[in-house]
Length: 471
Image (tube, rainbow, N blue to C red; front, side, top):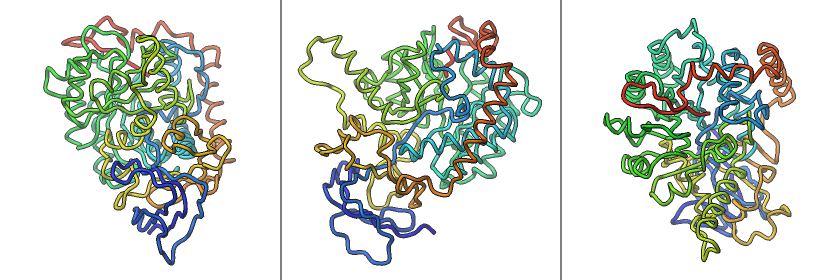
């Protein structure tokens, strides 16, 4: 049972439409849930955090991260999507051992928590054996945060003796759903990440139906470059769209696609840093906003870019504002507001993965997933407009305390119960071993020609159309 906590005297940004922002309030946490919010709460027998001058807000939600790539940090800082696919998906991913996946997910999930991300969607498409899948879950659990472990159905570029075919991967996902991921009340829940739809169409249909038989959320890379027939069109024709789907990127989605996602109750995760860098088109945020589609943000791959949501929020918003300004000239107003961006990374992101009733805002009865920011730091002083300041001025270094389901995982600027020196040594050793097995960093881009063996870059291979791959 988690302890009883009283967070006292902070500016509280609830991200709840009814409660709003409270300039000086207390938050009481009992049994892992928010018991009360308001000024001057009278409470005994609780551990007290005095937070005058601080800001309390919901934990951020990252809806798209390939956490297994943590050992590859910044190797792809100058890569296009073609280079990324060649180096990471073709060359490096088959070289990951279960122990590499474990340390990657442990360190990557801790990195997220350290930056105020209490929930992440781990798009785990480096599963070459049941041991890889279990190690990925072990790493997420070791960090202590909340995660949707999206079992990646994608086969690697080389055959796996442990998961030799499509049906074997589905059976392994079923194994996890029957056993350690049977409960949806766990901090680490189960989802499914579909194979990019250049595989035979019947395989994609089978994957979708298997995920629905498991009763778990579905996420998929979608329309990250121009194709003849989009994933949304293919699925709509078969009646397969649904509110359980989280579509990633959608940079080349048509307006009809966006309306179809909206009408089916689906959601979008934009990843502005990778999309802008890698040549995957312009982030869909503005068009999704206009179409009325629920959208959120993800950090995607730290093999290329940063892993904190403050950067992602600011980049997504200012890129969209810049594009709008270029279209209209000197604008009379800015359609995308900072408070709307914060909603996208809290309440909307939680709704996108089926957790809207559990997290995403601060309200009595919800799980106590929250973050304390140092609003008394120079970069946030004076705190004139709290929500706007979170988006426009805050950074990961302002994250002082992080609580997940009532349990502090970071307290006073220090991650709780983690041997970070040991973890760093293990992560560096994993990096060294992976690069050595790959033949050195210089060899990573030596097999670009193999891309066409594993991905359709727009020519069309599926039975009823073609669709593209992504990060």
